[in-house]
Length: 276
Length: 283
Image (tube, rainbow over all chains, first blue to last red; front, side, top):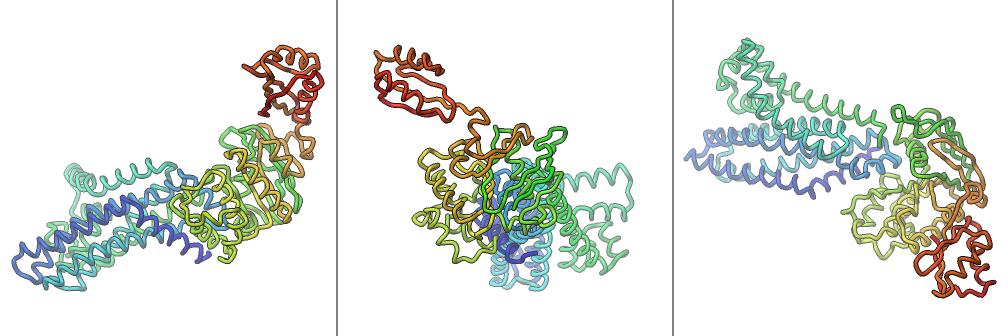
């Protein structure tokens, strides 16, 4: 692998993302809402300190669950399909580059752009919290940001997989939006419906919910902030009793699997394609 | 320098290239000639490793399938449809592709000057004319000074002036000793650049010949339109048809269908009959 090629492509991808109006819109929405939530949570708490941070963190988790998957899925879905539709991908592959370099360069560039977006959102909200003396545990805040970034990478991998399977950007973005709906809304509804009709045990319900990376993020973030999952009800209590602090490793492994496996599948699909 | 051995490309049951075997010698230029759908572009895409294929393709002794990067390192490619990042400027684009090709950045300015784009470096690629874009594509292909130039219909989207400019540039490139493989269906392009021509039809190689005999071998015909004084149109038709030329009236003029090497014959015929030719146009 040629690192110069990968870095050149990553830089271009980052530059393109920063020119992409949808990406800018999502970033602006994320930054604006993070800022508003931080301010309102602290104002509503009436006092600074951990109570303010817990409230802000809970609000941020919900914001992240809505916006970050949408942003990462759509930029990922556009990546390969848009270039193929424009014809630029074929021209790129006609250069002395390999497909693994093109894939890695694009993924790295998009990952950097998501890091910039997440960093900006959390950074500005963090400054507000710090000024208001409501940052609580800085480590917990940084941990939440780190988990958010991992979630964005997982959703990016899924988006790139959709892109590798589509020839048209419109179809890929449609697929990305459908998956966003499925992860954010249909996942919860489906889980509730399945639990009721199949009479699932608490353990089965826990593992079924962990198939959704958004649930993994949510549980991991709550565990970081509260040190327990009791507020999630029976499934949370069961998880704490059964796995205890091993849950942190389980959550990390699941998130890593959601990042790596779709990315590998996307690369395998891209590598096999012979229709450029 | 370039060898295709039993090259076959199938799309399901459709065979786009059918057991094609051909060679391009070092420092020579071969044109792939054929109508749309003959399989010319597919051959180029296989050569660049963009399509999976059966058979073998070697460039400078390197196998396209197993040594794709090394093969593409030796090829400068000019596509038929220019697919550029429109928001980049010409010089940004050149810098981007120079890095991908591992070409030194000092090559950028001389190459862009060679293709006549020195005054347009800061323009976004989307704002360049068709001829400029094509010259930029040629410049990008030459950045790493590759021994092989592969072009897909290099002048197909250009007007006459831009076509002439590009052909002059390509003639210089050929003189510099590049091995050239290009697809075309324009006879003047083939005559100007190619040493040999491989004629394809429905994915199969029909025959190869030298470029000078292509027009005769494929029975190429040209239409020449003459404008003559209105009162001479009928007599011009009679004279031309009397010479065995396929002539017919077309508005205020006469159209004559001639074989490729006979474009001057109707002019001589009209001149001998003392019929004034006000203007003419070759189509």
